[in-house]
Length: 371
Image (cartoon, rainbow, N blue to C red):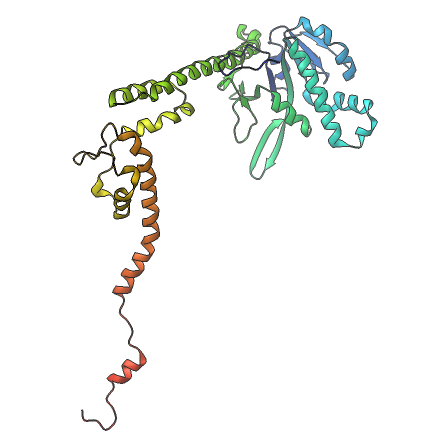
């Protein structure tokens, strides 16, 4: 496999979508609106969908594997449901291949994961998009009720890991909605940043291509991120060359204006230039430890500073920036350590000392002495 460079645009690839919700929420009916779908009916519920599409009613996982050559005629493969496919068909299949896995749960799930990833890789090589349907499973974590796709153990982790989008179908004000955004109560995955979307009625024209439009948005989002990354890398290479040539305020201001087009995470190398163009704090407002370090610091001894404005000159501004930040933080730490000592000295001066016992006896008149 060739190495994909950071400037290369990622080609369009098949996507994996997981749909889950309560029974009767229309998961299978929604999956039939994808482009040229084929349903792998492992839950015996294909006849409850709103519209009929081509369906494979398999009884074992071996029957599913034998039918893979016929999958090339379809653009979308729908697994209904993932729990039956993984925990029933695939689990029995790996146990038949190796009977010892019946008593070794950890190895059985590992073998199931390998077989399932091989199955997904084969379908992806055919260019087919994948939709896995799951029921909703509620778990209580204290006072919070968590909703997640219903799969046993490591099967759910595997399914969520390879999925590009994970959507929850629910009823809101009598209307069906699908949400891909993860929350505290719902498992989700939203690569394409699709907002909460109302599902059209089954009799509307928009319903017939609803999932096909969702899959198209996901593919366009993944590819557009790759294109944006390529453009950002080209721009940051250009700006790095301009950063080394900054010598005055005008060139620095122009560089900072160009940096606004970069993503936030890529602006870090140019922050030193932005901080260097800001005015220095007033020398008189600095505490005496910071002033002492400014005088003693060898890196700032020869830095030309304007006494009226408190700014460095153009030649010394860039070299002074790093030491200025370090000295300010060091001076703050020194003052923090000195405050308790100064407070204690102040309290010691204000509190009156109690006279000792010997001093009290010396002040008392002695017996027989004249008063």
